[in-house]
Length: 165
Image (cartoon, rainbow, N blue to C red; front, top):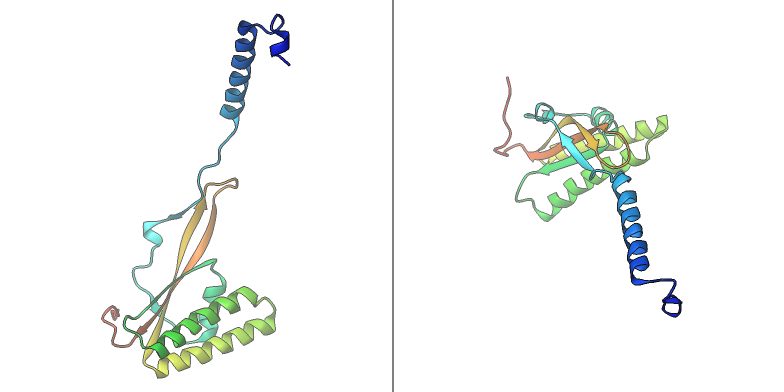
């Protein structure tokens, strides 16, 4: 269409239209706020140095349900049966945290986790736990604080276990 109207749309006019459009796009993109990448901010003073033992499902469920994330750890060189036992324990906690909102569910969750803890103890495992406060930053929303559960299942003989007196 422009080629047929070469007298109206001279090279100079086309260059001006192109330059005006490029400047308009550049201006629009410059004014648009590009959100910062989303990241988790950890605070050195909040990272647990030691985890405490937990012996009851009620206590573990209370801590787990107050957290929005979970770090898990376990002893090395597990047998196939131990892998299933510990893996099912972690999954059971995650499932209960995801679904338990009614009082009956909370009591059932605590009982189920308590039963798992008893089995793990029977196999000479100990359960350790701590909560770390973190912050989610970036994206479209303002920063928000959240808690992460550190949960470890270790053999009683695991050399990482340190007794604090």
